[in-house]
Length: 312
Ligand SMILES: [Zn+2]
Ligand SMILES: [Zn+2]
Image (cartoon, rainbow, N blue to C red):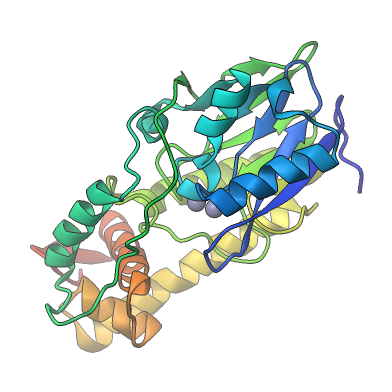
């Protein structure tokens, strides 16, 4: 299906080392030429980005603006390089502008947060967590902070910023006429991890479910969704419903675990949900379990005493 927009949109697929395999980078042929997301901060991704742009007859220097859907390294990774080459403005939600101006290429801050969380999740000391000792090829750049409701002028029409916290607190979707750029908020094939993608914030499941309801309300005005990973899809309403139902089911599953075995700490709930977890899955699994436990407390179905959760 051809997107119903005032400008052509080109989709580039940039490789990443994660399980999704590729990131979608979108080029809107507007004035200024606008890029949505930039791929992961590796030399390989940058080379692919340069070559893919060239194959579409786009010179890097022609890019006038970069809009980032959220702070993750596979979305913001090459924004600094595009800005260095073209002088383009980099826009990112105000909550996450530090991901551009104050970069952490060795992931030191992330590892500190993980260590703190492991303590509160009661992750056994002997659990091995090789927490990605990679060094990202990212440098500080100048961001322009944006907020929900803002209209980004594309010359004659506007790109509307929709703040959709959940996957991260500063995640945004962008609407151009009847097309929505969804970042990792709504993906076609997988349910985005909730909790593990933003260890600075808590209460992310409640935010995510609210953002999903918001997108579902907008769905009658949207013909095509362009996600951060995977293929474009048309039925936004159905996808929102599927993701919503998935989390309601997981909340029920966590309640069953608490009823059967509670009181429990986060790590035990995560292993009950996901089986043996190792490496990065300790972080993602525990964070996802915690996000659901927090939400059950918010709903009054569970209570929390220190680091331990039980049926209310
Ligand atoms: Zn992503
Ligand atoms: Zn993400």
